[in-house]
Amino acid sequence: MIPALEYRTPESLEEALDLLERHGEEAKVLAGGHGLIPALKLRLAAPRVLVDLRRVPGLSSIEPLPEGGDGFVVGALVTHREIEVSPLVRARCPLLAEVAGAIGDAQVRNFGTLAGSLCHADPAADYPAVLLALDAEAVVASRRGERRVSAGELVQGVFETALEPDEIVRSVRFPGPHFAAAAYSKARQAASGFALAGAAAHLKLDGRRATDIAVGITGVAARPFRAAGVEDALRGQELSPEAVEAAVRGLAAGRELTSDIHASAEYRARLAEVHAKRAILRAAERGSAGA
Ligand SMILES: Cc1cc2nc3c(=O)[nH]c(=O)nc-3n(C[C@H](O)[C@H](O)[C@H](O)COP(=O)(O)OP(=O)(O)OC[C@H]3O[C@@H](n4cnc5c(N)ncnc54)[C@H](O)[C@@H]3O)c2cc1C
Image (tube, rainbow, N blue to C red; front, side):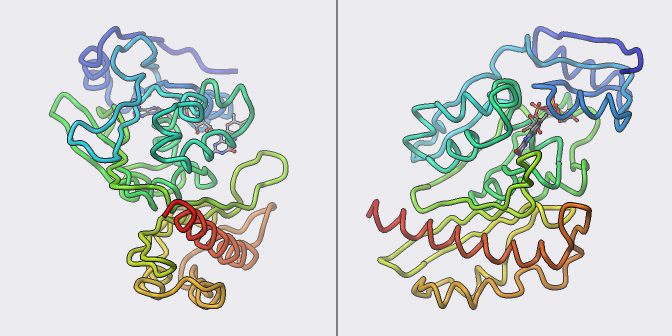
């Protein structure tokens, strides 16, 4: 059972921000509810006021970035399903559409939002690896103004973010300039579909040589991270399977890894290597095919 709480449905972003300012830590934002409602039922969260964003206008669209290029911005209420079928996302960043289409089941995809997933900070969520690899950033609003926070900074730990209690993520920006050479690979937890380990790669290519590379990892630690050692080893290199295999070895070394009934820390570390290699080689293939 969910403890009694006040349910508010503001009609504007300003009204929602006023409510958060007034109620501080006692308030929680509600988007798709597919992270928060289970957390309320499990008493992992017990807000006194629920601020439902669903009537707030201006948060439900996917738009090109005004400055041009391939970049785009996803509003806070855009669902996984809307991302999956968006012609703009499919044309500019097929990887994001593909990842959105593989989350949970149809019901989760019809309600859950990208921004909600980021703010929920579930260590097994899929998007964080992708958002890190694509250098995405959250546009965060409060009565004090607006700021941008990179996805890597926003997620601080298990269900922990860098958001202040009075802040709302109004959108997530994908700056580009291009997203063709990108891929995600994960080991699915058999019952839930969440990532035991997931890796996303985003490349800039000159033929088969990576002129730049970003690799995001999720599922293996409390916080998603960029595999900086892999990136350094492969930047400027030909992406042969052998070179990639050597570069991903030990990518999680020195980190405190999750160990639970689903997978040991050692197993997760190996899964991260395997899926990083797959993501990098798949991204290279896609980039070469599109060149
Ligand atoms: C059965 C099931 C299977 C799932 N499978 C997967 C899976 O395979 N992969 C995966 O990655 N995820 C999976 N999920 C999680 C799913 O993606 C959720 O939708 C997502 O984690 C939360 O998004 P939401 O919009 O429902 O957020 P909510 O549940 O509404 O909110 C989640 C948290 O974020 C905060 N929040 C939400 N929006 C904002 C905002 N704009 N600004 C500030 N704070 C905000 C809320 O206060 C709350 O703390 C699954 C969930 C379920 C129930």
